[in-house]
Image 1 (tube, one colour):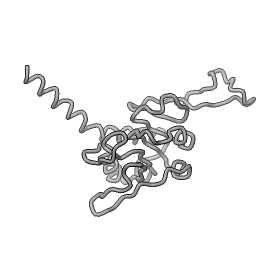
Image 2: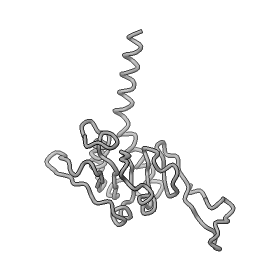
Image 3: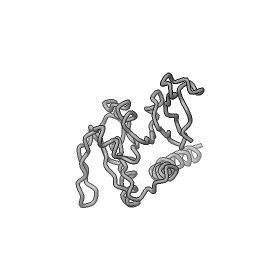
Image 4: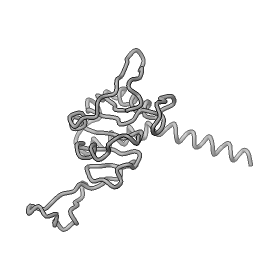
Length: 174
């Protein structure tokens, strides 16, 4: 019985440690569908902490995602109200202010840690493209891709502006 339990724990650890690579691969796919390569794309990561509403970066999957994106030569910035800066090799990386300009300039905004104090409607209103790995935007509209690559829908209105476009005010992105 304990052998099975230990194997299950090892399997869970393998899955958790491979998630940063999976998330980066998903980001590359999302950008490719938009005709953009990951290399030289502006990526804004939301949340760097190990988990929601704490200031601990140790063993953070977000930190691994950040490093993988840098290795792939993406232009990466981050915002985290709990992690004002962190050290990456010889570099000190600072959290950027979450402004409409910072969001709009990103080719892709990715939510990695879902802190309670972050204004997610503000992000969806200003992001050209959003990858939500935490499902915090499930009740919001926008150009959103959920973990696993499932595309959400963007609200469009008819030329009359009344939302009667035959899709209940929503039309597919893909």
